[in-house]
Amino acid sequence: MDQISILFAIAAGMLSFFSPCIFPLLPAYVANLTGSYVSGDKISVSKKVLMVRSLLFILGFTVVFMMMGASASMIGQFFAANRGVLEKVAGLLIIIFGLQTAGLLNLRFLMFQKQWETKGPKNGWHSFVVGLAFGTGWTPCVGLALSSILLLAGSAETMYSGIFLLLFYSLGLGVPFLLISLLITRSLGVMKKVNKWLPRLSLINGWILIVMGLLLFTGQLQKLSAWLAQFAPVL
Image (cartoon, rainbow, N blue to C red):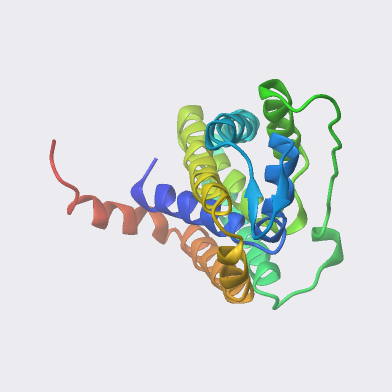
């Protein structure tokens, strides 16, 4: 697993969080996880409860994403003899996903969506189950970024590389979720400020996918990673 892939996975996770599918719904996610409510200009909930429930939610979707990464890597290993062809196909698909995310394409069949509803008492177990549901029923614009990471995992050399690639994607998605969740217990003003940047962030996300797809399709990804590796500190 190379440095470029890791950075790409983290960036894709962060930009997935700051997408029109996820970020505007953050107060609803927090309320669902904690059983809290909006009081004045903030979410009224204990920070301890918020931390525990959010971490369990993040753990839930991380487990699902890592399992997907393992599956994608196993498929990639099955076609190891044709890895060059697999990389070109994966690169081309990632480019298409990037064009869709950037708004340069409008392919309706890519705008798939699954919805899961979870009921029951709002406790730690509920938060974990909601995380599992989120991981298996992502919304359209998150699905494009996640699918791109899965394609990259499919071209990884080992199953463990694919698993860790999805772990970094989950961290990119989960850490901002936790930080912004804590901020909105102080004020919802941060939501209004970030919302103005969402269209630009979607455009950035799309172009990152396009560049990554081009690197993978042309075989330049490994060369670039090898060049950057010479600057890595020796431990």
